[in-house]
Length: 492
Image 1 (spheres, rainbow, N blue to C red):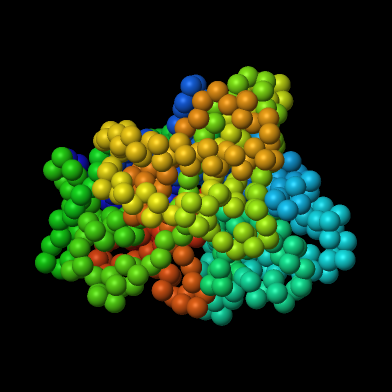
Image 2 (image 1 turned 30 degrees about the horizontal axis):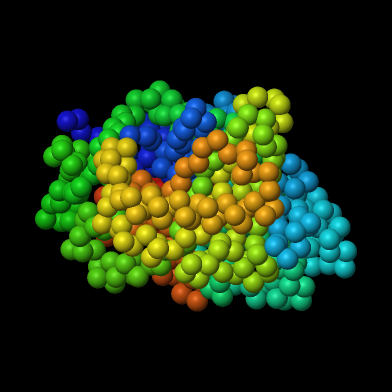
C-alpha cells in the first residue's frame, strides 16, 4: 500500500473539497469511502429509470459572483453543472392546511422577496425590510460565507442570538412569523434554542438564487472526482475504515480497513460523522471533556422519505418546492405524536427530462422520530451489505407512506392516480448510508444557550487528525464547502 501525505475518510462534499484543496497544494492525497457510491448526501439512486436525489433537492447561491458559484468555480466544476433556476417569484411556497387556497411565496432577490410577501402582508413592509437587512448583516459576519479569505473568529454574542426572539421583536403577526420560518426543513426545525445565524446562513443562500440540478446531486460528485483524478488523487470506494494504528504519542500512523488493509499517511482528515469517528478511535486519545461533549451532542431531526415515479404526462412539473403545515403551530414542531397524521411535509421534484411541462418524479419528506424504527435498529442494509429487514418493517413503511400520501393528496388530489411506483426510506436508511447514529439529516443541533458545546475546531487532540463535514459545523452545500476550506488551511 502506498503512503500518502493525507488520507481523507469519507467522500461527502466536504471530504472531496478538502482533498481537492490539498491536492492543489501538491500533496499526495487519497480518499477512502465505505459505500459503493461517492458523494455522501450528494448520492442519487435510480428507480424505473428515474433519478432521485437522497439529500440535495435544490441549492442556492449559484448565480455568478455568489458564494457557492465562486467556490465551485475555484474547484473547476461550475461551467459543467447542468442547472435549472427555480421560479424567481416563488422558489418556495409556504402552505397551511387552515388556508388551503393560499401559497405564500419565498422569492429570489431580497427586494423581490419583500415585494412578493407584501401582497399577503401589506402592513408589514417595515418588518420585511428589517428581516432582509438582518439576514444579510448576519451573513456578512462570516467572512468565508462572503468568499473573503480571512480568519474565521467565534463571536459568541452573534452565535448565541436566538431566532425566535428576533422575530418576536420585529412583528406580532404570527402568520408572517410562520411564513418566514416556513422553509425550516433547511435546518431541521425551530425551537427556543435555534440560533439566528443558522436560519440566516440557510435561507440567505436561496434568496440570493435557487436552483435544481438537472442530473441530480451526483453530478457535483462526478465533476469533483474528475478534477481530483487530474490531480492524481487516489480514490477507494467499498472500503470501510474500522480502526486506526496509533503510536505512543497518540498520533495516527495508519487507518485500518474492514479487510485489514492499512492506509498510511502523515495526516488524516475525518469527513464522517463525529460520533462515528470516536467509535473508531475510542476515548483514550482525547481529553475526557472533549469526548463527553461530543457524545452529548443532540442530533437534529430524522425524516421519512416517499419517492414517487409518476406516469408520463400525468402530473405537472412544479418549478418550486412546497412546504406544507397543518397550522401555524406545526412550524414549531418536528415529530408528530405517535399514530398521528403528518403535520408537515416538503414536496420537491427533479427537472423533467422532456420539455413537456410534466414531471416523472416527486419526493415528499416528513419528519420521523428514530424511535419509530427502534424495533429494527439492530438491522443494517446497504447496497454493499444487503440485509432485507422484516415483513413487519415493510408493512410499517407502507402504512407511513399511505398516511403521508393521504395528507399530500388533500392539496394535490390528482397525485395519487399519477403514481406508477413508490419507494420509501426511513431514518435507518440514512443512518446506514451516512453514518449518523439516529439518521439525523443535518448532523447535530446548535443550541444558542450552550453554543460553544457545538463549536468543534478542525484540529483535534490527535495532532495529525483533522475534522470536516456537517457534523462539526454548518450543514448544506455552502456550509460543508466552507468547512472544507477551514480544514485544509490548518493542515501543514
